Length: 248
Image 1 (cartoon, helix red, strand yellow):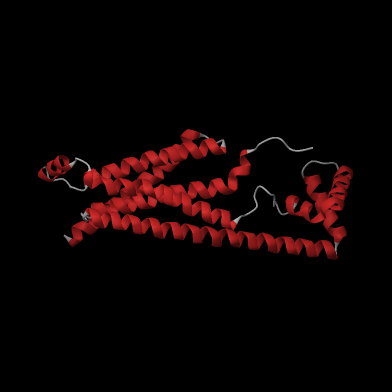
Image 2 (cartoon, helix red, strand yellow):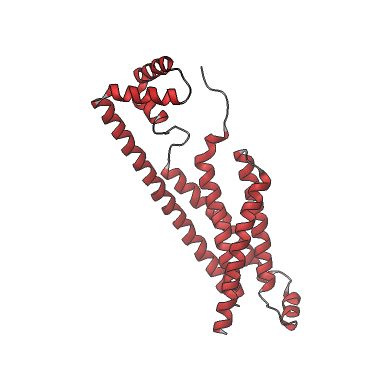
């Protein structure tokens, strides 16, 4: 009989990598652009910084995810090899171990023994991997999948603030910049505001989509990504202002 129910947990592997990549792309590149803009850099330098941040971040995400998830796979494989060796050397002890696990979960000792015997007769290593080590098909680490998804979603997320930085100099906002400078403000404020606004909207949308895909609270996810995104942009804007003032 096939299992026809669908569970959100089946999406954990790619969803985690996708949300991490897109969120990091939006936050890191928007923060970089805002920080450089706050230092009173020219528009070309701002765009070049954003492109460099996109490329470096995508490669970093791809490499980092692959290495970290591969380490997880190595650990899982080491545990499976150890379990297979223990099954070959002392199967009776492993049977008792599995029986104890089922008793602790609420089964009567006699029934727990029967369940353990039948599962080990069917596939002993799979039974111990699932019930002793906690390894399942849903939680199986996939390094290549995580690497590709993270790099692609980082790039897509980073394109939003980068696109705004690229088109901003061509928008009819020169009067606003002149008014700010006349009032003693910063001519970078319009770009900072535009990049910050589009990035915040993107983060809110990402939080809502990821919550819907994972069956979690939409408002909690939106509030979480918005808070940390805004904090990152504010901090880097402050660093840019201090750097610009120091080099002026």
